[in-house]
Image (cartoon, rainbow over all chains, first blue to last red; front, top):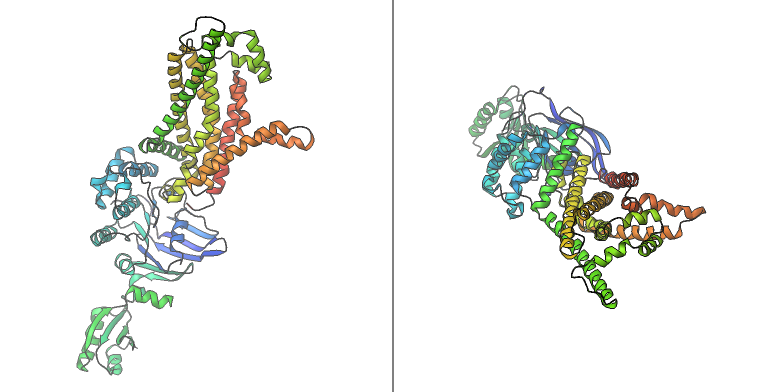
Length: 315
Length: 301
């Protein structure tokens, strides 16, 4: 994948501030504020009806917000004249025209994006190859299986290497092999290409996204680096098989760390300042104390899973 | 502006190509061709039967092809006086009588049935993409006005193609079945009436796509389009009947907002009338289109 390199480097690909979207009496976005760093893979996590899809539709100009401001690629809210070909959308439940042939439809999208005529066939072939549909280029969309259609929807989102791709549930409906393949595709994207991914599959968000935001009732309740949100950058978790806890010995070994004992899952959580320690140093000291005290350790892991972090923040 | 026009052109081209691929345009062409040819054939057969009976009554030898008596009748003073009385305007009546009868029949057919066929073919075009969600793939790549205008122009091209084909098809039929309809002059008149019917259809394409932008289901859009056509027809007749002084002047509004009432300008032969009617109908079509756009622009795709 290639990305234009002659433009000034952006700090944020997207800035949303106090965005409100109402459908009659129902408020779908209630002052949503979000900053998506340029070049990041940004995960949007939230329960059903939290406002993730509405947020994407508002960003992509499919819907208009009632209040608030949106700054997309430093050029104001979505405007097809400015953002065509630079911003793409992969909607969750929108069908492609069933009677259209893949190559014709993709050619049409490419022309609208302003891709020069001589490059269209090459660019279309490129994205179809990524999603393993090169051999079906002349097929009609109605002849494709559900999974193939989902892959085609992913392909159209990456046509012409947009600077920002909005992907709503990109991996749903794919078979396990394709999930792996698509995950790798998303990870291998150009350095300056920004992804915003909305998904209920928190394991995939965790694997792909370096930033994450939790949305509930149309607002962001927490956002940050995925490692920071899950605690992977500053917390070690030790599942123990026996107690009592040698808290004094641990405090002596790591005086600037906080220790927390979670009775419900027999886990010792060590929060350490990541500026002065790294995970290996923390492990060396904590495990030495635990082993010296004869305490069994059944599992060691960095931070929480995203799922646990999400449940903690949305509780 | 350059980007806007480029997008309109890209959408227009795709709309036409898509119509061919989906066989929509083939069905439309066949409907126009079959409708025009069958009706004209029926007219020629009825005319021939009438002429044969007349020849029998007068004990004259009957002609093997239709139209010989009709042409004579068309030129007779008595018939002309009768038509002037029927039309109510000598100038218009004489203009119509200067046109070959089969071309007038074709023109009448084209003006009468094109609005219905436009509703059947165009009213669902935007609504079906909105209902399936496929419009969302387009709206991140082009603006809504460019997309709607591209659709409008694509539909206009399809209808023009259908009308021209039906004019040529009807002329070919007339050439074989009528004594005097095979000349190029008749063909020229038929193509001219096809062209005028196309101008007339632009208002209805605007109306159909205006409705299509306001309704989410293509079937509802088509149904609503046909209902609107019927209501327009009824109100136009009522307006003609009830318009008068005082508050009854309100009925004249129908003249301004319904394309049906501009049809007579297109029947005229003088360029000033045709130009006046054409500009009004195009403006009316655009007004309908943008009234629908006012709804479409405010809602999600």
